[in-house]
Every structure is written in structure tokens, then in C-alpha cells.
Length: 224
Image (tube, rainbow, N blue to C red; front, side, top):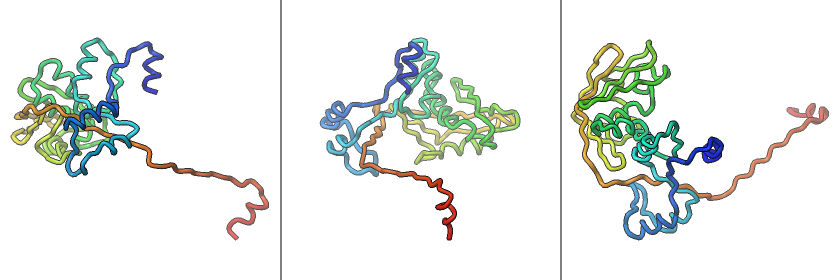
């Protein structure tokens, strides 16, 4: 469906996360593919069992597409944070505030006190970032913002993204207003560029049969 929409609009495909089994087999043979703890050891047989394998992209494909003038980017699998960090990173803002802001706002209003009242706005600069709800009756607090580092993250201070490790251990969260929070002190360090692979393969079939009875004489007997 994604490709059909792009073709219908006369656009070229911008980003792609699908991996080929042949390429991954070669990388695996060179020791470039390893399991994430505590996953069991990866084998070529396991790779062959996958019908589709995708890699969680970093921000670079989004930045490239936007730099080429894309109005809409239809992407495959990517880290949530990379989608939001792409624009500030491509415009030269520091990696620490950019990635940290992306992490805080990845789930929209989940970093606010009223999580069902819409999303948030980010304001990123050289020293840090501010986050503020879009809904006038919602607010961000140092607690609600800092707590989001725990969401889907094994370490409340460290966040690993493709090519970078965000370190928020020394970050400070201060209430700029009664609705807005200022975050500073986010640090980062470069890491070997790796992407998480996710594969899926068919293991069997499931058949479901639905039937209906319309005969009034039969229906009269039900429940007796």
C-alpha cells in the first residue's frame, strides 16, 4: 500500500528499511551481525527462516529526504526518536539536546500531566531544549518530562541510538513556566554505527470457519 500511494502521487520512494537475506548472510559471516542480549545466538538458519527483515533506521535517511525537498517522507522501520531528531540534527544543533528532545516527545503527550490532551511542541537550541503542551489546559512538569526517559528504555539515563549514546545522567529539568519545562545538560558520545534488526517468518497456518443458522425451527431449539 505504501508503494502504491507513492506511485499514484508520482513520487519516488524516499526511505527503505527492508534488508535482503543474502546481504545479511554475508554480514553475519563477517561477524557484523550479533544478537542483542539476552537473545540467543544468531545462526544462518534463523536468518533463512525470516520472510522479512527490517533495520531500525537512524535520522540520516530522513535528513537526506528533507534536504532533497521532500514534503512527506514515507519510511519503513525506524527508531521513534530519529524521526523527531532529524530536523534539528540536519540543521546543526548539538546531538545531546536533539536526541534527548526526540526521546521526550516521541509519544506526544505522554510526557505531560494529562496524557490524552494532544501532543507537545519542542524548542531546541545550543544549550538544551524546552517542551510545552499544545493544549492550553495541559502542562509539563520536571517530573512528567524526566519520567519519560524510563519509557521503553532499560536505563533511565542512557539511550542508545544508531551511532550515538545519549547520556542524560547530568541533565536538569526546570519548570520554565507552569506549563513549560527547560532541559539542559544532555550529553552524548559517538558509538559504532549499528542498527537493530527485526525479522519475521511464517511458522504455520491458522484456519477459522464461521457459520450461521437462519432456520427458525432450528433457532427455536437453541438453549433447550
